[in-house]
Image (cartoon, rainbow, N blue to C red; front, side, top):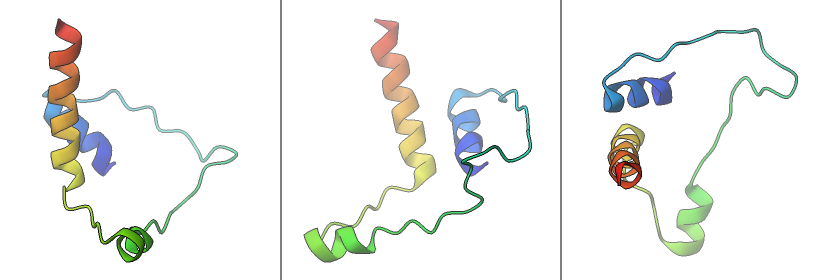
Length: 66
């Protein structure tokens, strides 16, 4: 829902949401971590998801308006 909220904020409109029960193959929670990436490469992502989504939306709209 955080990702959808970031998209809504970046686009300035509310998404039409159709909530359904869990589907086969859905994962109730994940424990993603970038710790291995940092340990192997020294790189740690620092862009908050909402900022990244807003930047992507800006790029997408500009790119596909041409």
